[in-house]
Image (cartoon, rainbow over all chains, first blue to last red):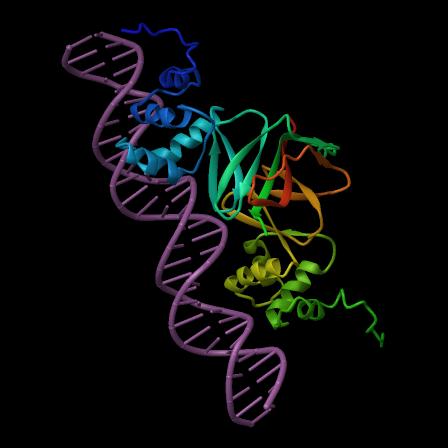
Length: 142
Length: 142
DNA sequence: CAACCAGATTAGAATTGTTCTAAATCAATT
DNA sequence: AATTGATTTAGAACAATTCTAATCTGGTTG
């Protein structure tokens, strides 16, 4: 029942991968399902691997690393640097910023509209601005 | 010659350390001299260690790590997170932001006055803003 | 639809950056 | 000078990530 086949091809993981030029293998599709299933997410490699394992997905840690990097290069993910020694990947690739809760390691999006950065100095000669990252570091109240 | 003893105690490394509550050991003084000698600097542990070695300063890498962390806790340095898997320490502890040249790993200060961030959303309940970091990521011009 | 093959996956080793450990050394005081 | 608690150190340990070489698989071909 339920003749599907309508979606603008956005919700089907395999299609999304193909569009990004990535072969939709079992592992990539499984990870894409976890990542792009619902709302925006922020994951670490270890975290995503644990999640996949918990869902009996049988993906090696090396593949999780490979996949996160490939997705990032393909523009499906964005890397967020907030903690030295650990990489976060954000499924929200649009223009926005972050709250980072230092005690818990939790990352939270701040829509671009809310916050504005003014007075950007021009990039030094020979360089161009690739991105402006704003991280609001939070600690526990008092 | 040259009766010194005038400085407001800012330029003497040992005094600066004592004021920060750190015993001015040979190693700490040596590193402080490298760090606070002149203008603002951005160093990594490995980089500073190499510098110290080049200057025949005989400081172990472990001590460089310890010292950078102690200086940071004491407020003499500030850690800047721009690259996962490598920590940068900035001798400029005032309010300012950074250019980060992704290809070379070079960090460059942007004085706080130049750039302004408006529309900061309020921190989630229970949390307070510890700091707002703005990193302008640069890549090579076309 | 069987064979093929470039690309993908994997376990485990290797690398990198950093912290830890336990012993030796040192700065400041007595 | 002796004492002592902090500091330094070499090297081991650790954590996150990448690499390697062997195996497997998706998509194409004949």
